[in-house]
Length: 515
Image (cartoon, rainbow, N blue to C red):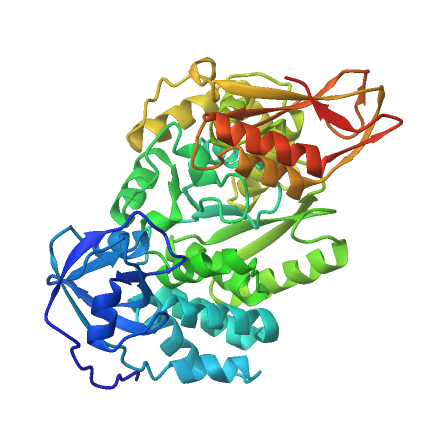
């Protein structure tokens, strides 16, 4: 059982002030006068109590401009976490030592953890008992030393126990998840309604962009609310067959969300965390049958097939031990899926597919392959017949009707049409000087350019790809177009595009910006 040492209050209450700064974790900004008066220093850990809300950890930062003496500046992470309002009383206390921190240190030293020790760490992460520095240490320990299978199973179970859990009265309950790493991977809004059309439940929760240009939740939010409660996810799934919601908007395995937030700055991606993150949320959402997509190839998270097969084996093994039937698809990950990258552009392309357009063949093929396999796993289609049934469901309009029903049930406009979705008003096309063959594209470079253009925060920002590997471009041909909502972001993306040159052209000159 985790216990904490007794705290000592530092001073009389300060006045809360929301500060429009995200410090990478809960950060408390204090004036130098108050820092000196309290005997604190920059970087020190404190416990913050705001009004009558539970206390939370924070790191002290010193500023003579963001706050005045007597004020406690709350970073965006603290405001969002505590729901603090300006003027509320804020009391500080010396940070108490959370005893489970010893297990973080043990893992940093390469030690093996018992289920009880893992449970203690996860419970304290979910409670907010650790600072973001301590959570970063945990993620770093997993990156360096990893976990064996028994530890990962315990980690999954601990994550599930840390939050809410949805349980359906009848099954099977399907789910599909891609580990990411490929821009434009917009299969979900097509596959989910296809599966739901055939009487199977599919409560699909997805992430926002972490290191990518756009997550499924980001582009779904263009057309419908995605922050749903557990009760809403269950109700909508039972009413219309499925949802397309943001996993971070509900308390399913909440410790995972805290860990994900600290992974991005250091580009951490430990395998144990990936396995536990995906599988814990599938268990928590009530799934029984799960299809995992592992994109493989140059520029993807998993570069070679051998590593992908090893990861697939881990997913299947751990999944079985936590009560899930897991199958894994190894998909092509060396180029974007479809021709769009960015929230509005991606959901528009998915809608175009649902509306009957057939140009985005890569998107159609991937979505129907996944949906078809889920139909087979769920017993709706005979082995080998699922993809044909999925394609038929897409072609005859049933998938579009079900997608509109899901959108309406989540509070969006069920009559949304792709033709009414317009990207950012600013754009720049990128050209080649001479004719040549497109022999490759570097996904991470495209992601960087799209993020520079404003993705995912600016929904209209993104990239429209005019060619793909294997295409021949003529002199002056357009490779892709950058869209943005703000001129300074468009300029930044254009400058980055000049440096990165993500398209490899055989027999052609390097690209340049044409204004």
